[in-house]
Length: 270
Image (tube, rainbow, N blue to C red; front, side):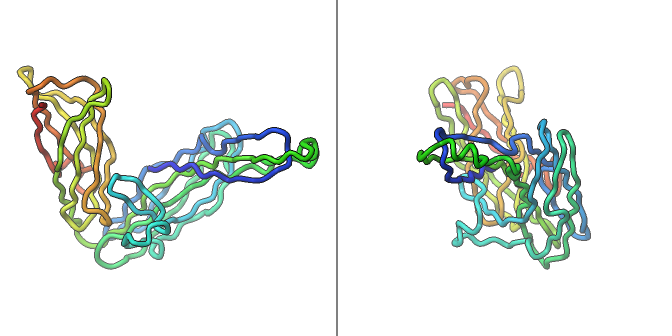
């Protein structure tokens, strides 16, 4: 799942600037939707975990991955090739209002798209309430002073993937290194996608010494999408690693073959 903060700016004649947040209590489940061959329907739930009623827009937006793992709008990256699923996916409703602690189901359907993998992002954005602006009296009280009202709109986006045919998910781990950032030890690595399908899973880090192998940390839900060949992952290690100790890094599938080891490597701490 990806969270976005979308600023909406309005010019208003008031004496002092006012800042507002809308939708920080928005949540969505599941964190991704994958349609395999013969799978044509799914349900996504939107939750208003706040204490006030909220209205949300629902739309499909094409987004692409960059080499550092960021998810950005495809419209802003025309040089990146994406096999979009927008024409293959239907969903309803497209606008919902929820009371505090209430949830709403979004029905998602997909049709076959031919061989390969197609993807878009179901994006739910909290809309500002009707009383988010200033009244006429509030604006008039500001005299001739002009300032900005900034309303931050939260948006949650999850990938919707349509696959037809066999999944070709293969990966390697490359460029593994340890660096220090002050007192913090950072593990850096590249996940390399070798197959034609995207890969999605967990990066698990273990430490091995005379006491055996024990888990050190993990980065959950790491994807490499077809528009990039590799992406960099950085994990903060919760404790220092002594020189000569061995780290085992495993990339474990959480998609087509849950639990399968997609890639593994070792690193001896310098």
